[in-house]
Image (cartoon, rainbow over all chains, first blue to last red; front, side):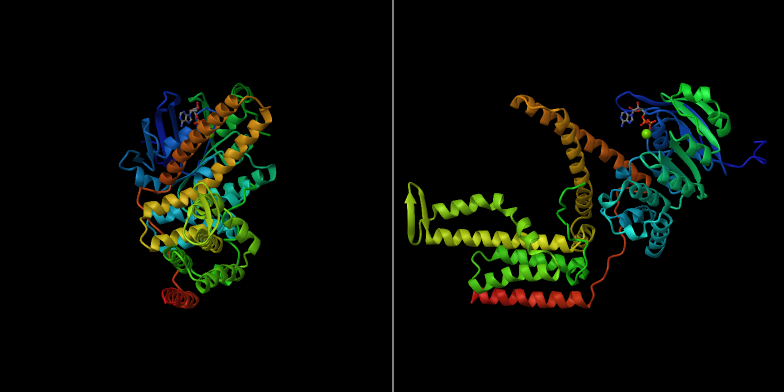
Amino acid sequence: MGYSGVMNSSVIKASGLTFRYSDGTPAIEDISMDVREGESLAVIGPNGAGKSTLLLALMGLLPCGGDISVFGQTLNQKSAKSIRRRMALVFQDPDDQLFMPVLEEDVAFGPINLGLDADEVSRRVEKALSQMNLTDKRQRPPHHLSVGEKRRAALATALSMEADVLLLDEPTSSLDPASRHELTEYLASFSATLIITTHDLNLAKRLCTKCLLLSEGRQAAYGPSEQILDDIELLRQHRLAAPK
Amino acid sequence: MHHSYLDKYARRDSPMHRLNARTKLLLFTSLVVFVAAVPRPGLVVSAVLALSVFTFGAIAKIPISYLIIRSAVIIPFTGFAVLSFALTMTEGEMYWQWGPFALTSEGIGRSAYLLLRAWMAVSFMILLINTTPFNQLVNALRCFRIPSIFVLLLSFFYRYLYLLWDEAERMQRARNLRYFGGFWKKQAALIGNMVTSLFIKSYERAERAQLAMQSRGWDGRLRYARIESLRGADIFTLVISGAGIVILWVIQVL
Ligand SMILES: Nc1ncnc2c1ncn2[C@@H]1O[C@H](COP(=O)(O)OP(=O)(O)O)[C@@H](O)[C@H]1O
Ligand SMILES: [Mg+2]
């Protein structure tokens, strides 16, 4: 406690996080991390390392072992709902994220569930759509959007939650280099605490102050971004291409 | 992404499209109910109804060819009933007979009416879904006290039908690349595998979509955004079409 005066307060903290899928696959094992005010975390690792599972666990969507606390509040069955009001998750596949018949309704889904009044809901929908440059696509069904638009749409559904913590699962995968750059710059302008899973180490370097390297569900390395992203040998060992 | 959408014209602009979804839902379902409730519409009533299909189509700027091609879906569904009516009726003037089968004036008349009614009912539904975006239709259902869980299921159905379709198409393509003909049995096993993997994929998709809903505050209860209220044009349309249906009814009964 002696340090708390000089260090920023913790946003999201986990210790000994462990989860197995019902078929016995140990997806994450003994993960510990602490992301503080003003920091952001990149979760990196090859396919199947457990990145997506970790994000679901941090949202309190999986019954896992270990402890999580968000803004100092312990995450459990009872507190999950109120804690989730401050967090927003964007899935890797936008088709999982966009489940309503038209974009506008999807963006409104979260705010409506938060119990906001109609004016506040439409204010947030307008804002999220214009931030993601999708205002003219609002009445489109998701199957009439391009891949890049779907990605931004998925992000808009999370932005309308106006959460303090934004968890993004591989936000730039399957995007062309220009859209990837554009999205990275969008994300850089956000004030929320970001937790991003990615193979794109340029994105990690640009946006995140901390890095967590996962390998087969275990924590292979954890520390400041510069330290991990410059360790070319470590990255190569885990099948990741070093950032430029 | 080249499936021909069932609601290809739903997002165009026309006086029909601008009407409130509730108005159109009420208008077209009353017309369908009317067609279903009148087993043998007279010549005038039939003509007016058939004409109304094309008039609505024209106002909504939906090509006649599209209406006709789309409404051909009734053929496999009503074809059997129409044929059996036409071939088994023995009342009326006899034109042709062979064993239990016969072609009579009564049989032809009845089957023609059946076909006409089926065609009109389907055309009204095609007009409805091609003048009203599906989400608005679903929201309109909600106003008519359809249970909300059913309404939600319907909107998911619309959302994921196309996704499933695309997935099936991709699998079909992947299969065709590696399939070079063979025995029926092999073919059947392949189709079986495809259906199974499609089922598993949809199941997993449903699980993830549920997590996505939960992470955005979904707790099993439904909350909705505002509903648009009826405008002058809606009231006008409802009054005129209501009066029209009553007049048709009176003509029919007299
Ligand atoms: N729904 C599931 N059921 C069973 N096993 C799963 C499920 N989702 C992921 N897994 C397994 O858990 C491990 C971690 O997966 P995931 O978190 O998706 O990895 P990543 O996102 O890093 O690619 C993998 O071995 C994967 O096969
Ligand atoms: Mg993943």
